[in-house]
Length: 374
Ligand SMILES: *Cc1c(COP(=O)(O)O)cnc(C)c1O
Image (cartoon, rainbow, N blue to C red; front, side):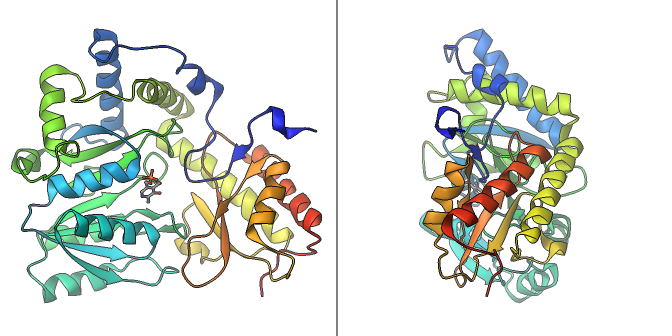
């Protein structure tokens, strides 16, 4: 088979494989001020709020750019300039959040955790008791670096008990893992078009708690990143402040329709869990070992140890898997050599079986007998 004439399947944490229906939605042009496009924006915002049952408690503000743009905008908009941010750090995306908070000029403290462990609500409670100057906590729901599922509900409870703001990067978990805004208290929660909603990349969105929206005015030192300003303008006009990613939004609208038809978040989670199970069972047969304990593993992206065989080199392994039609993802751990395989996107167990087969063929191409690590 010559795989070059069709798209490879993306086993990555975004961009990811999308359906033909989602791609076809992008074949039209839209005027940003036109009533048809304004209606799409309104429909998408309504649907997003419904996913977290946040209609009564939160508003949602979309923002142009990749997911990180929205994390940066959320920190800059929600945290006052004299605020103090505590970042709960168990991986690469936490470190990115700490860096952007620092660059935004907010006082930032990092609470370090092992990247093979979930962040700890007990440690958070202690840190908040020890340092009352902390005003906001930042956490990553699914730490995409290793794939850890962090305990959102428990962290939110500790923040609420201590009267601290909570900013949640739920980029790779939103629409797959359950998030109920009626049960979990947060100031801001961030996700994006090109992750578990299976849209294309190009816009993020931030859920803001209604009772803090007004208080956010004037916090942001950036014009383009000011979510309060974006919100006020969008409420008034129905339009985006600056040129919207029109094709990305209509693709997201179409992707959300398919998400709803599939059965919403529980159905999406079930499909990803099926993908995850097929993947780890198949990879275990090839000798591969996952990095995380299954009890903290989210069914979003799996980190595997690199094989011990000296013929293994990620770049060559990657190119071989690509020739067999699948795109893998490099590891992002600081200490040990790993690679990652995503379970998300418009794929099911059949594609995951094929992915495992492609990995088996890639090993064979490289002359590696087993995926077993050292
Ligand atoms: C994907 C992702 C982001 C955003 O990354 P971008 O490259 O800016 O889209 C942020 N946080 C987490 C946890 C992610 O998985």
